[in-house]
Amino acid sequence: FRHSYVLGVVPHSWKTALVQPIPKKGDRSDPFNYRPIAITSLLSKIMESIINRQLMDYLEEHQLISDRQYGFRKGRSAGDLLTLLTHRWAQAVESRGEALGVSLNIANAFDRVWHKALLSKLPSYGLPERLCRWIGSFLAERRVKVVVDGSCS
Image (tube, rainbow, N blue to C red):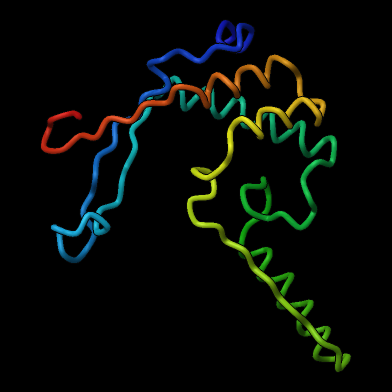
């Protein structure tokens, strides 16, 4: 793990995902009725967890994540946000004020991130160069193989 991080290089074997399409209820001839389950390297998962922890610690320590961000944050959940919003709406009703709620959920958001722009922004937040280099390697040259009935694409 240390070697990968110091060099900023993610091994190719860590970048390959085997995707097994699992049928949902409904018409099996409809490609949208399948849930893709990606199986990746265990070593990659462990390293991703280490990097994620380092990144989240840095972002929180330097207050680079909005206090209003609840998803994917340690010690916060959608339930916590719902409790806060319900409390705020109740306060507005009691004071005969107004309350407005806006929620945004971008489908497949991670799949739509422009990696080049993301990687160019990371250093501007003061992230360590090694971490930026590792993330760049992690995002580059990813491969997906689809497995159906034991055969691989």
